[in-house]
Image (cartoon, rainbow, N blue to C red; front, side):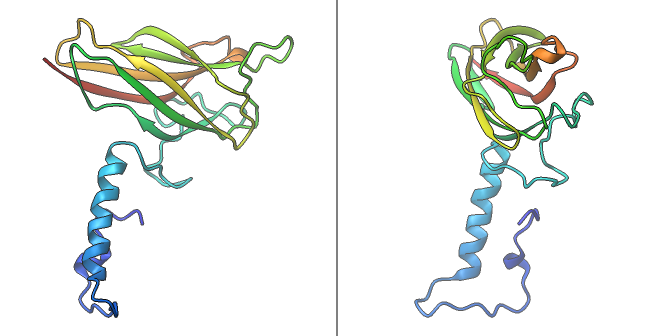
Length: 183
């Protein structure tokens, strides 16, 4: 459930009982706490249409019916040592009406790629791994290395499309957050 607090922790009249002695309310509260931690790390996606969901276009108004995406999950560290690099993954759903191609087929004009920006500068492009039709999901794998960065690294991931000339301004911001850098 999307509530911040588990209902079981405030229930005035606990009626659920287990014949084997399992404390059901306490177990549900524990699971809720674990899921809350996973959600904060980006490992639990919000249901479609949820007000806290991460549909592209909330940070960037370029999203439309034709070219739109939803960040489903991400595996990006919140903290990284200055001497380390991290392999990151994001899982994305194509919620637009236009399919995405993994290559630049002639006359299709439907290739997409992920642009990684660190502190505002584009540092890498990641190709789409496989064609992704409407309502299908895909993932991108990329690495980040905070060489020369001080306390924080501003990481932004933008999905850009061939039919929009691979423009960052017309792209879909899928992720935009700071990563804390430690010595």
